[in-house]
Image 1: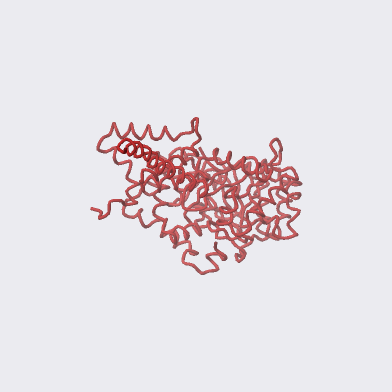
Image 2: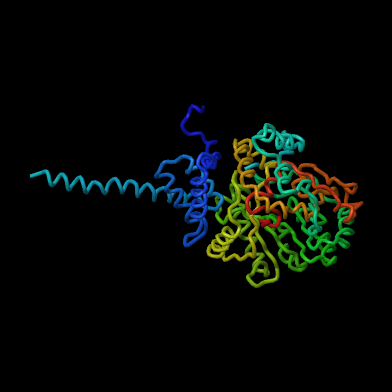
Length: 111
Length: 351
């Protein structure tokens, strides 16, 4: 047993999840593959979205995977960092917008 | 950025047998990864044999004005292996009679061979359909004596294929050296100025993209689109096609992979991206590679690994296309580089 919760080599084994639930695993990977094909958005744009989300959900596997994917697609480090800021801005905005709820509650309870 | 070749630095990896030892070891010894021969055997492609010869690729020398970090030739200014006129004469004899439709001159920087222009002049008289010179672009700006190369290429109707790892300065210079980007841009503009690469022009100018690090190339068409937009908008540059080429784990790229602790992950990535369809079109099945000293190889990579063709005919002086074509192609784990994803060859993707 590995003595760490995250092992970078485990990313290579992602496909193995299908072994314990073939139908659902296959459906997921088919869907996943389809999502990242060129569509109304380019594969390049999707890769940057994935990188931003990877940071927001704080998934080290996804960060490794989409940094590499970005390099493969010729995405620059400036573009990658800006996408991380987009994720961070939405995440901190989501926290801060709850400040309005706090203000509402405060005002309601206060004389 | 390296400043000297592995040879000049007397590195372990300058020895081809050491490279082959590494390629055949590690995850390929304990069955963690399948060996290339077993992988292609799954679809009945082992042993790999040539089809019709289409491309004669001649390496006129390992000397180069650049020392790119990923170079599979381990080329550089300190390499003295240069094709002599005598060997060129032997090549010309073959070029005049070959059934191949493409002649592909490479190096090093082929232009640095003192007999380069004479050779191009003579070879162009053979009337081969597609006559390629792989020019690294910066050579055109390296010294006054090379400034007229665009005109020279044009007058011989040469097809230019040039390396350009990215359309931004940072990524290009990191891989190829300080100042390479600006010189390459200038050279491309000069090639455009004499008529190369123009949208409906007949003078072919293609670019080669290879990743500047331990990752595989992305979709060739998407990269071509991004390169075209950026180079046109930023510099007014036009070119025809972009070839996305996978870095094979040999020579300086292998050295880099090991030093950066990326070797194992890279081999896993190559094997994972294995595409059986790409095997059908691997370039060793339609190419013969000739070294500066006239030896024959299945491809430029096998040349750099010192793996001469498995045929009675091993040297250009004894060249016989029919005998040569009846051979088994030599393979090792580096071959996974040509079968990953959409496939990779000196002409870009293969599927």
